[in-house]
Length: 83
Image (cartoon, rainbow, N blue to C red):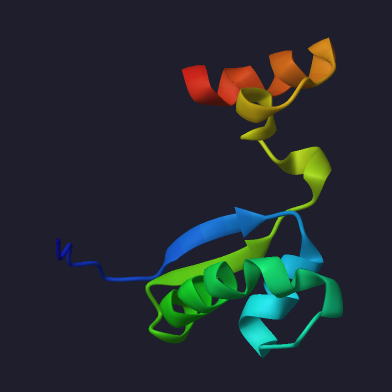
């Protein structure tokens, strides 16, 4: 399926090591098991389909959908989904 786009899709990531592996092609000894996934994402980054942007964990709104977070964090971020 081909979907045209004007700009790269921004993918927020709180893991700096993951961003480093994809953007620089750096090799990490303990990351052999994710080699295929890294190359897959790297191809999209190189083709400017996606752009990886660091977002600190404290600002990661999607965490309320995937993790147990403190009530205050849940209430703060859930408002952004409802607005």
